[in-house]
Image (cartoon, rainbow, N blue to C red):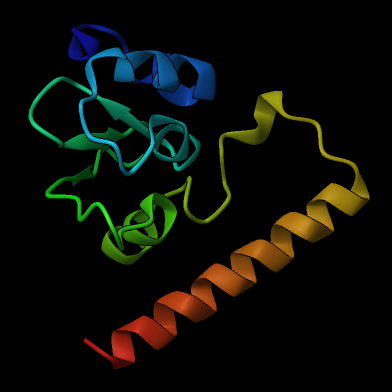
Length: 117
């Protein structure tokens, strides 16, 4: 199963998506989970982050959004913060600016969410 491979194997979104072959829930969708840095190890509806090793489960089919749940539960995760081990990713200045804006937005959402908890 998925846990037999090195964590680095799951840095690739395509490799994470492959782990959802036996995912039985309608929502969240495997593509949304994989794009949020998560992969499936085959245990109920629990998924694991390839970057922080955080585990998320007990998904609500109607309201849970994978990236928001990931960010809320693991706000310091490198994936959530946009630090996706970029040594192999070349970003141009426009992409870097967009990524920085996204990180700022996610941090603001985390800060605001903590006020309601």
